[in-house]
Amino acid sequence: MPRQIQRYVTELLVEILGPAEKEKRFDWCRGDARSPGGRGIALPFDAVWESRKLIVEVDERQHDEAVTHFDKPGEMTVSGVHRGEQRKRYDRRKGRQARRHGYQLVRVRATILASKGRRIVPGDRDADRAAIRGLLQNRGVGF
Image 1 (cartoon, rainbow, N blue to C red):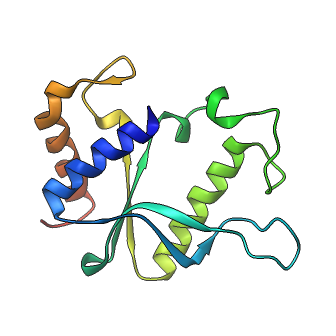
Image 2 (spheres, rainbow, N blue to C red):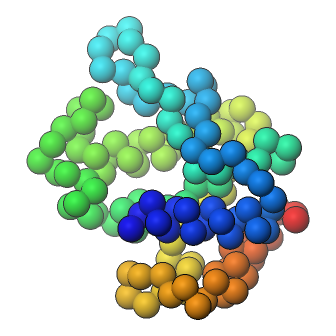
């Protein structure tokens, strides 16, 4: 479901802002390395508009609350913490590095979408587009 939400929101963003580079990775934003002195993998950004110096990240439920399925609390990551904690670290890192490199980073939380329980209601595409437009306007992004 999270990838479905990410794809859906990215489609709406493209309708509003025009074509984007999806899942773009930059050498300047990497995850933790497996070994000392090693290099972690470049972290993906959900959608990037280079001409606008804009990055949009779509934050599904697991970015705001503990979700056992995604956090895998019994398994440690290369960072030495469970996936939920690593996600928080990487989200902060992506924000810092984006700003450091001159990008505006906007987070679209899935909670702003018209929904029924935890599922997107496809008929509310107009409402979702309006919510995203409002968020972008509040962050000073023009279209």
